[in-house]
Length: 169
Image (cartoon, rainbow, N blue to C red):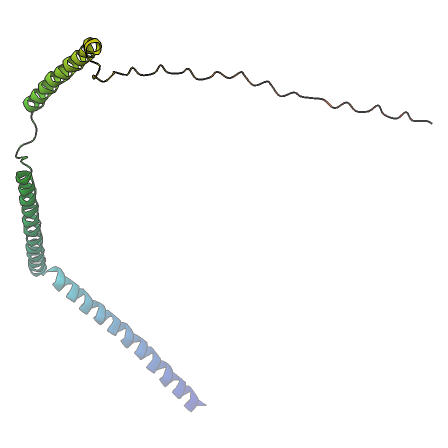
């Protein structure tokens, strides 16, 4: 029995020692991890340099894209200018141009009105002297729309019920 007690004690001592060593190993690993993190934290210049390099690369890409869009915009503007040249639209209409066109339209409207009055007056005088002149036709008077009589309201009839048969009791 003492032999069994010795085996159990040796086994318990071995387990306790392994637990102790595992704790010391965990502490050592935590210290190593902390040292690595501290080293990384102490390397901000390297991290900063890496970020600067990445930023420079992105800036170059953005400038290239902007230059491409600027050249595309320039190409579109050239096309628009060519179309304007083809249609003689070098400049947008100004107020003076519009006012001059309005005056010209007014003058032409007055001339047309005078000519139409002259034609109407000339037709009357030429009818008596010339039979070959076409007769001016006055438009026929408009007919008034036929007035309708208002519809009669629908008759409502109430059904009279036949008198109820007298009950004989």
